[in-house]
Image (cartoon, rainbow, N blue to C red; front, side, top):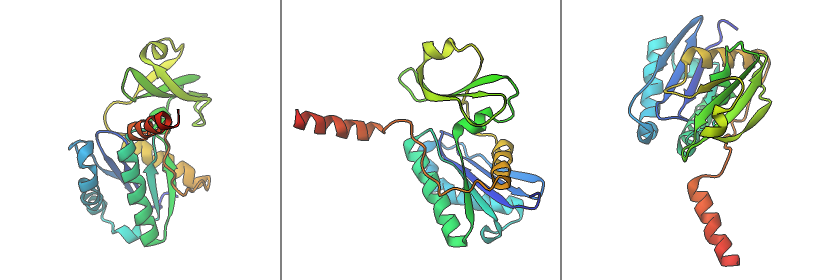
Length: 203
């Protein structure tokens, strides 16, 4: 397990995170160019991170991707890129949720993690007893979130590369490989507007 070489991509938020493990060492790149440039920055950032780690893409044993929730466009970019890399190299994938990354390593009996989804709302997940299997997943307002009777962790900035690699190793150990399915908690604004227009036509 210690020798497993892993590459993980997270494009779900404003700041991309590329994490790569080679032995016990974790190498990362955190481009701070905004979500609108994820598509153009992702492959150069992967290449840069691999060079830091002294690896080539075909030396990666397992690819990982943060599949959401988060930016709809970002999720698609990350999932599509990781799938393409895994297909080209014939390697397996693990999926990580944004919730798992936030909750990993927390020892409280209960913890709620939250991701801003705009309009005074948050995607949230509640975890108990350090398990990464949430007991509740949903959407809460700022007011509802403030009333949680447990520790609350809000997403802020890029993901933690060390946590991403640690979660991936845990999933590899448990043989939890994935086909990488985007994790959305609601439809995108474009999809909601499309549904609304079609609903008007049928009324």
